[in-house]
View 1: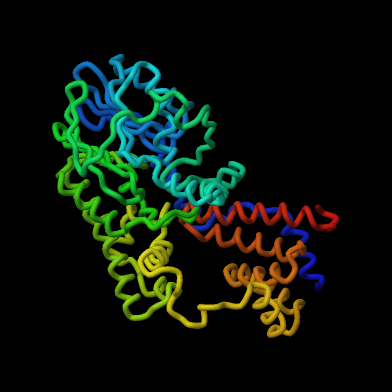
View 2: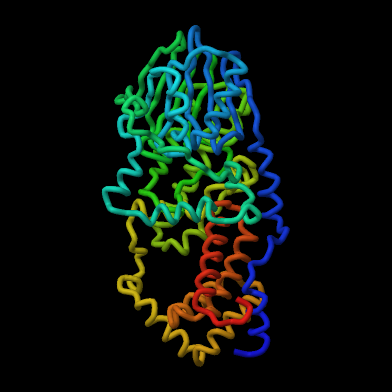
Length: 455
């Protein structure tokens, strides 16, 4: 290793601070969307934003309240309930869960504690987690922590694209052992009208982000509670923590069905409410059409024999959608959606016969090193890529070096530096968090095996 590389590694041992790239600045500005607030959506509808990572809504009926979604944990739910009580002291008669993700269900014990409310959800609530458990998968939890940035220090997190950088202290399980805290009313039809406290609501089942999703339509006030099938960001059509295929066509159809309700206000699954018929119509229309464009364009390219790597170049969101803030890649990412559509509809094989039986990772790395003229030259090429700001290539070369010697500290430090550079130039918060968390893990791994005097 030459002197310049040794000098670099001495600096690279410590993670660098965020550079003020345009992407970093835009993501920081995005945080105003998550400010704590109580938004009066209609005469008797209030939405509490910024208390947790998703808005919690209250509908005031004749003699009681209906709560739509409950936030991430009991701590935030208690704060929300305290501020609800500044508006009304009516009892909670019903809780409606738009789907089974923990950031929407964690506050159930708080809102259910005052009595015995009806708790409504689809009959397959928690379908995604059940699928993981059935397969014996646990890696999704580790990947989820990376995606969420939960292992990063506060200075490394900006926000999560559709929510503030919240560190949950759950204060108990999502559903306790008390059977009364589990859903006691289930939506088993495509659409069902319920009446609670004099409030008539339609619950509509529609798969999208999850297979247990529903939206809530309040016709008297023309307010729609969309769950996570709509929020102000390019949708997370694929979650990098891992998930079953999210049916992209069904997701677009769900948005279309919500649009047909003709709402004057929408409470998204994340981000602030959207109020005003024209604005709601514009957002839902573009949201639906943008999702359909990406799906149709991906299928078009697939039918031409394109591989996923070719498709992510071929499928570009037109400016009529890409220029809209509410379709910007704060949370989901178009490239990830394209790859998911390919895998979800055609499977893992990309159609190139070379990939039917690829070389083992270490075997390819050995050949790459030989092609470069030796491991030292491969390492020098990775270092030069870092010096040139070519972080993606540097990371890929470092993967080869790590495959050759998993115990070596230097390639791990170089890859950490490359990942941090990639994070600075990526807007999508989940990807930034994943890059930065993996960089942090690489530094820790390098430290555990290194004898470098600065460790």
